[in-house]
Image (tube, rainbow, N blue to C red; front, side):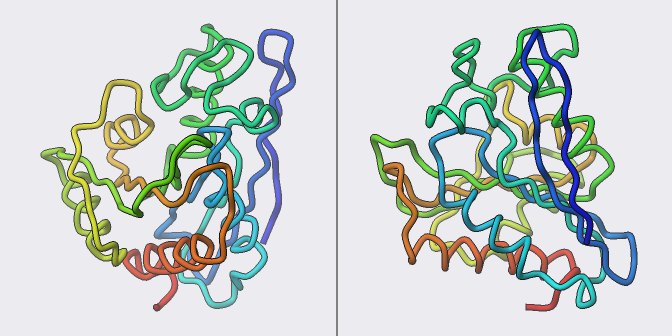
Length: 217
C-alpha cells in the first residue's frame, strides 16, 4: 500500500487530491475507484476512506487506486459544483490543461488517475436536496469497453440499472474513449451518511473487485 496526492497550482489555487494505491501479487488488472466528483455526495467518500484501510494488498490480484475526493474545492464547500467557477466537474471532461479551474482539474484527474487502468468505478449519490433509490449506470457504447461496463454493472447486484447515453462531459465517456470500462453508481443523498448506504457501498466495491478478478467475493 502506498499513499500519494496530486498537487498542482491551478490559476492561483492549490488543488490536492489524495489517493491510495494497493498493489497485490500482480500489477494487472488495474482499476480506479473514486468519489467526490460532486462535493455534496458523501456516501461514496466515506465508503472509500474505509475501504482504503480495510483492503489488504496481500489478498489482491492486481492494483486498486482509491481516490475518495477528486473535487476537493466543491467538497470543502459542501456543494455539487466547484465554487471557484460554478462548473459541474462531471460535465467538464476530458478537460483542458489551459482552461478554467474545473477544466484543468478534469484533465488532471483523467491523465493522472484514470489513464492506464482497465476499469473505473465512480461513486455518486444525490444532492443535499434529494434522496435516490440506489442504482447503477452503464453506458450505451458499442465497444469492448462498453460491453465490459455493462457486464460489470450487472455483476454489482443492484436491483435497478440504468443503461445510459451519458451527456457530454461525463467522466465515463472520457474513460471509454481510452478503452477503459466505466460504471457509475447512485447511492444516498440529502447530505448524509447512513449505515445502510455504507453497507451497500462496501458491497458494490467488493463486487466490482470480484468482477475484475482482483479480490474474490
